[in-house]
Image (cartoon, rainbow, N blue to C red; front, side):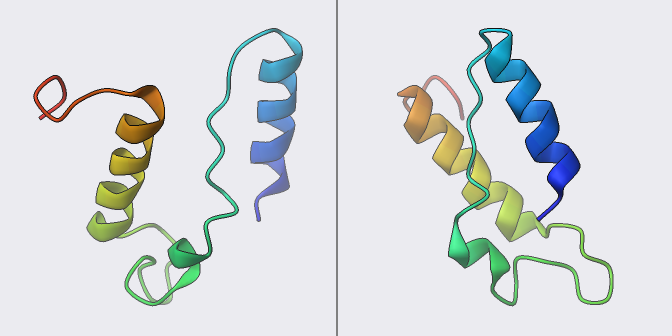
Length: 65
């Protein structure tokens, strides 16, 4: 967990800005979601995260292809 991300989120919330936090999603810690020996997210991770954001915001696939 990157605590600097949580610190930024805390300040955003304090300023009245809504923050979507999916950091507790265990599936993102599985193989295939992180580039080995690099730590950056894979295309699969980004696709899944985009789907969660679209779902949370209530946007249909037609609005956000």
